[in-house]
Length: 503
Ligand SMILES: *Cc1c(COP(=O)(O)O)cnc(C)c1O
Image 1 (cartoon, helix red, strand yellow):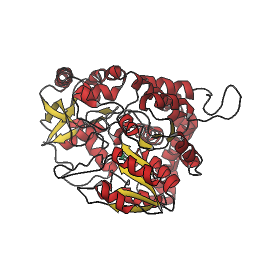
Image 2 (cartoon, rainbow, N blue to C red):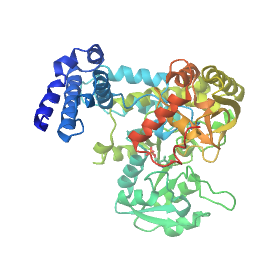
Image 3 (cartoon, helix red, strand yellow):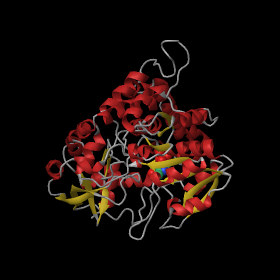
């Protein structure tokens, strides 16, 4: 009987050397598509794991040692865990156009081109070519915003939240900002109007009631220390029925009498009247300026469909004061944002063509019959690869705008509705999310739903590939279930409600 240390020494001696593993074709292949140094590290780690298993007694005899194939698989896993592309593209079948989790709007081709132009090399972000001196980084979009909105000047910050904080801090610091109780809303996540007002250093003065606020309420609240009249678009929340709010136009007169600044957080930033495409009315940015708001702020990645940013427009002297606020340094945007916004804004100079030039306007305005045709093509693809394993139907459905834009107003759509014979809806949806690229769906009444409105034409083939991709050219419920199961274990998803048994 050999003693333990002798056995261990023999086992250690059987572990392949780093160089030996690096010579294997599969590992060599890994080195051609990944940094060699990183692959070598993963090889070392895989060996170290085996040594540790021997020390721990988990590997006690030669037959317990992992074979070459197992080691290679472990190395591949280590490499892909470390270097697998993380911010990967995704296919949005979930039917939410501005899906915050999927990065809100896909950028228009013109925005992608502007981004490429400005970022692949140096660019003139903050340089005046004439003088060679430092210039204003906001000037690239200022002219276009003036043209589109009618406002004198503009300023770009990280998001609309930053825009509201900057405006309130500039005009209302240590003084009173008057706001209707009907507009003290929370817009998803952490944007709550009272909290934002407090953090921006202004003194919040609430007027009116939840459903009705009158001009006289604002009038009665004005004191020596009042500085701002704040108006907030309630976005994803709407009061129906017995309701009254005070318009910008009415507030303008009060602001003039008392020397107050009107700040309007209009939220999603509709540039044009959407009723031209049969969508519901949404107050527009140019209207807010025309009605007399001094400062209007909105998101760059809601109805503008550009990069995440906040756009502030308004009277020139007001914009200048905000540019001089020390917070500006923390809120300013770089060349990625400025260029992508530039390429997006351009499209609004020709609003008639937006459905062709801008992906989210295509999705918002596409005729029902076009969506229906795409849904049928998607259904056909899935049937081709899944045979009788998935029951595929094309049905009516609804698309949501998302991100609090266009509240309470779904857009009619056509969806592909799926029920796998041997997989629960949760398991099928999980496997689709884990595909490459991931396909996001929604689940309704134990069926997986793919909304054809948020799918692009060139993604239809891709979806067929996703359903086939797991196994080659056919959908195989067993493999899909295994994929869902191994993901569940890795992600530590527990509970039968999440992953009902196969069958
Ligand atoms: C969405 C929204 C915000 C927050 O904008 P972000 O750009 O996401 O920071 C603020 N106010 C209103 C009214 C909104 O709709």
